[in-house]
Image 1 (tube, helix red, strand yellow):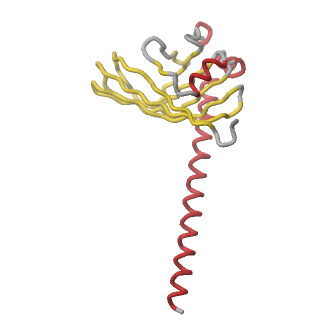
Image 2 (cartoon, rainbow, N blue to C red):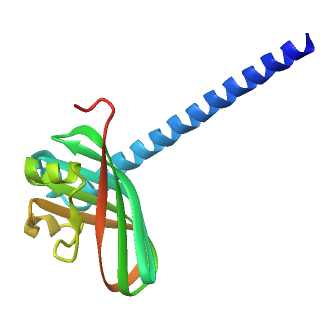
Image 3 (cartoon, one colour):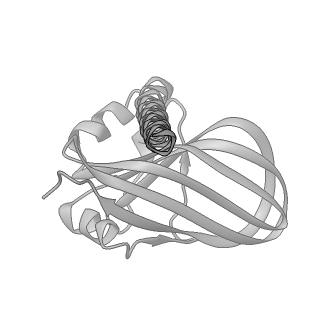
Length: 183
């Protein structure tokens, strides 16, 4: 009889632990979704013309918390959400490796706008890589007015914290993951 009670107690403890993990993961995802929403508002408040891009672009990816650091060798990583015509279609990860004169660390928001369905399709196939030819525009009032798409892609960044001095070469790579409910 004691053995039965032990198994029942162990099963109950495991169920409670699983529910606790599920609740923690749900809270983590909610915080991440909130970070994306806040990043979108931060970009819109920094530059009035960015609002138009959110409405007219074929799609966009928002990376709310990209961490970057370097000392000769550098790297950055972040994860974000991807939208097509304002509808969530999946998530993505951003990875960057750089080499050159650099020192420091920072956290920033990155927004990638896709001019047409073909550019968004390249991103969704994880075929988009950004290098020195495709540079980001700092999100500040007036910047979007003169910004132009390059190969169907336009990138804006907004530093949140930190300081980074660099003259380096490298590029960003992206990996797209469709949402479970996306077609």
